[in-house]
Image (cartoon, rainbow, N blue to C red):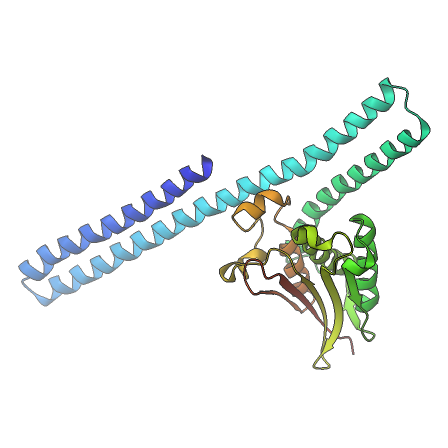
Length: 302
């Protein structure tokens, strides 16, 4: 219902802007063209028309952008609320069970594992929100130090296999040559991990039962750049969305966004980290149902 209301608001402001523009044009035709007496009057009429139309267009554009921005903020707040509330509720449930009931040792260890997993999920969400502020602040420079991108990617792949319980054949890593870069380890690690985690979330059943669902590679390009590519066989991305998905809070609209939970910050962090290190990040896809390939590029340290 909220989304429908916002769409009606956007349609209203567009219709209002178009209506005002038509009225101004009619006034112009009736007053300036049919009743003009001098060149000065005609000039002033044209100038007034241009100013009014420009003002109407700018005002309408601003209102539409604000409505869409508020919609993204609301979606972000809802997503963050879910990402924070769900693990807290789960932890509370298992702690209450351990406190009020007698549980055998195996079951107790299982509960401890779930509590730790939910705690990691909670901390991950909080850290992602905090990192968004850090990488988005232009005044804060990254702490650059020599590092091996190929080794960092290997660590991120190993972490994802354990975190998501994925067999090695479902998340394959093609180890390439040594790729030395100058980077902030925490930021680069977060960017690569976000790409892999996104691929896992949006691949769904393609990474289960030992299917080859995700391919990760680290390569050297043109002797100047080190690249990380994450290719999945998941839902795919519509062409017009390929650039928008890197915006803060932005999530693709449709049934998929409701099934896959998230804050809409992961890809924003990826592109921000790339820019802070003098690199780039982009996405490629054949469209819905054809999977996606994300590339993260850094300059090679000479």
